[in-house]
Image (cartoon, rainbow, N blue to C red; front, side, top):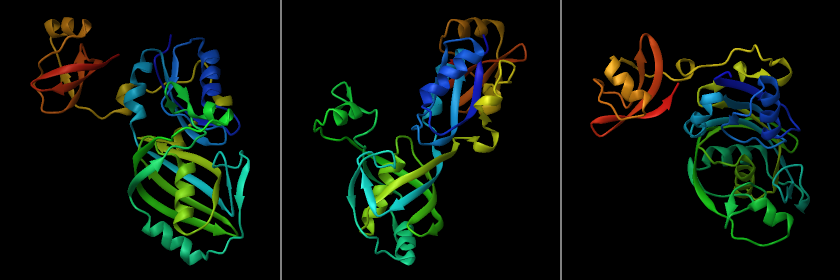
Length: 278
């Protein structure tokens, strides 16, 4: 079984789970996971972990993400994107100057409401399940962080923009919130994930080009941690997943034995605990 990471360029019209299922078939394994769902409408970077690297999913999911999106002004849907049912419509009256000013003045952090068509759970049930049953439920909120929010292009009632966001940010909701700030309705027309952490769209592979012989990224490819060489006694502790003492000031390190990286350790007080064993 192969262990490592694949950067996939998710196509439009398939779910993130569909991509995982395809990778399972290609590599003939069920031990596959992804580090951040993309809606079927969305495209771009989907980080796939195989084999033992599935233990890194939570660590990689916490990375910030960069998106390019198109918002369509003049209407609002129940899903906040073009796949939904139109709830409200109005003639667009905002100028390009007002749009640009709204983007420039939008806060770098704010409390965002989770969209009702999402997989976030309330009382053990996914929000989209409540929505499909037409049941009212209080929508959760979370503080989100934005960087480099920038308009790229405005044409007719379509605004193309780019933004870097924190974990858990919904671009659909962001579009609605930005449009509300200048008194308009807006719906997400398209979305492309350009980056997740250090993983870039330029290195992403199309699904049809992935085979069982495709090389996978290792921890040394994706993390830039200092290396600490250990002796045989400490190696036995690593094999058992024990805490160890290391001569390092770094919070996270690669532990090396016989010239091979065998684990990632994280500093806790005066010792290091294991995060991932290769």
